[in-house]
Image 1 (cartoon, chains in turn brown, cyan):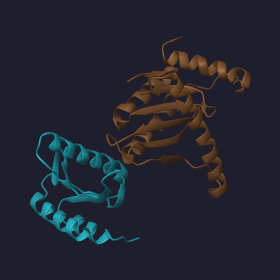
Image 2 (image 1 turned 90 degrees about the vertical axis):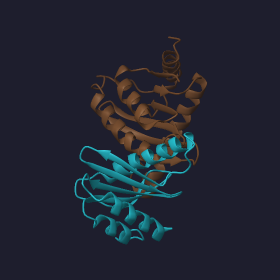
Image 3 (image 1 turned 180 degrees about the vertical axis):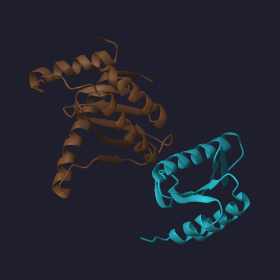
Image 4 (image 1 turned 90 degrees about the horizontal axis):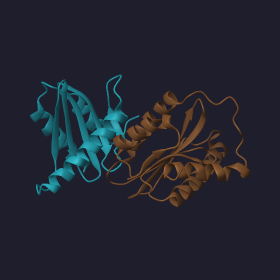
Length: 156
Length: 115
């Protein structure tokens, strides 16, 4: 199993979540789709695809929640044998998307339980936001994405 | 709000030394109904007890011991009694000096009434 993160402060919360919840795969990313940490993936292409899909699911389900309930949905669960759980974590640095995949080695109850702990741990561990945050533009998105993937898969 | 499990959980919680009882989804580890005391985190107990029961079942199978019915965890300050089925798991949190024989009998009776 490969476990890596782009920013050191997410290491401990993510490692603890993976250990306690017994999940197969885990990803932490920005709402723009840029990856910050991954566990269990062996190919950069898979991480890139999962991040793009997770960001899209998060954006569309949040909008659906606003339309139906007046506020974005806080989590998404799908699957029976191999299950997927998607949630949003709020920190001082802004929102993050958390995606995990688990099977019979864990359960939805465990994942929900430890996801709440992960959210609290991320919020506590997040350093203050950078003074100036650059907007995510087409021109720098791909460069940032490739840089993060290179860090995660040891090619930096 | 009462459910089909309310009477069963009430009967279990009335036993001497029982602090909490709950019905948990055997696969998802999510509390379906519970009878808790103030301050207890039912979702946490349900998720962990459900996981514990599943692992115990897997351990018994791996050791060639067949299926698992009743299991009991002894902790410093009390006991966790779990009786599982295919879809539901009954969980009782009891004090250390509670009558486990009686709890076990009532849990079996409860499981039969829910079947």
